[in-house]
Image 1 (cartoon, rainbow, N blue to C red):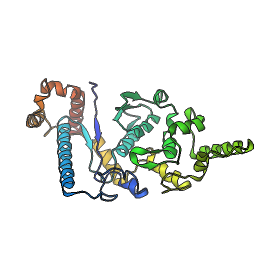
Image 2 (image 1 turned 180 degrees about the horizontal axis):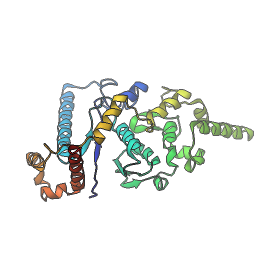
Image 3 (image 1 turned 90 degrees about the vertical axis):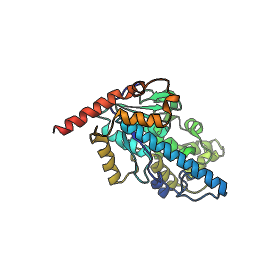
Length: 310
């Protein structure tokens, strides 16, 4: 376990993704859990099953939040319509000069944050620690082109449609400059025009994918042309997180306000663990469970003491 002197957990808010959905109504519409894009017809039994599953998830989420409170872990949640990624992105931009930040995530989108100094991203599903110096080893393109790739290639996980017929490997074969050089959307369109001209000189018909790029055609034809590129870029660009002024204020408050030690203690944690039957699975004591959090607990307690003396 790695000890940290500050831990911040970012939770998706209620209706998380609503801001992006307002921009593009197919955003994450492939996920049943989003009730704001339209209901799926279910049988009575399926409805009961989904309701029980949701209750179980909510119960577990609340319990985890209770555990984290006792361990002096900072938590940012209850920001309506806001996604955890936007919280993390904004926090990183605020504090990367003053803190050494490691982001733990399964979401490659957050690798955009390696643009900032003192930032590493642990991509959990790949089990790799990524920063601006080694990003290329794992992803085979310049880290500054991640947004560009997603703009043109889309993102299946978030149901963002890219240009029809182009995936990441194809994109990099057509535009090898993206491997080492940061590019803009206009650079790709200019290069595409040159590729079409070169093929016409040799009397070759232009590749269909090149025409799709120039015209901005995607599979569903929901968006087209400049609108496709403009909307996609806004959807994937975490350098401009989708937060309103109040959201930003709350993030700053939660990140900096000293945590009181009056109601946070190991007795509460032990109570939760006993209620959950935790020790039937954990073959050690509570002190071993808390050990990775000791540096955090000490640091946060000291900050609170200092705030009382001011």
